[in-house]
Image 1 (cartoon, rainbow, N blue to C red):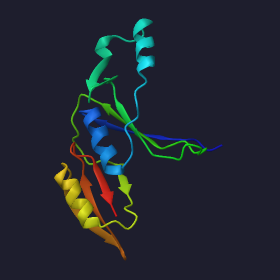
Image 2 (image 1 turned 180 degrees about the vertical axis):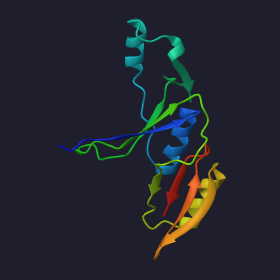
Image 3 (image 1 turned 60 degrees about the vertical axis):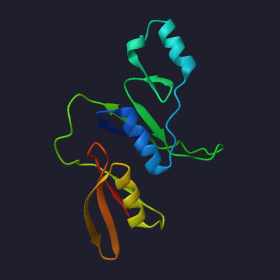
Length: 146
């Protein structure tokens, strides 16, 4: 049996990170079910302290996710990346990172756009004819573009 996975990224500001990565990947931020929030509040499973308002919408304070777009009728479960706040800052190099394949888009133009939106260029590398840039997102999480 094959399993689906979710990628979780620890961060300081989950909602800002989800917004940044949604723009970077062209994926939507997962919608928050307002009826579910109301139900959890009414039943005492959640309190107003569990919520924040972000971009004019009530959201769970404990994280935000983005979803890979898939066609409406697709049987494929979309990839989900969850951004979850943690109290400690990032202190060491990530042992896992995202590789973004640009499908022929101009790597230098993408790099410039990412830097304009708060990413940092770290280094360029290659293996044979395959070359990539290693970058860091606004909170310092490494990723590569190729």
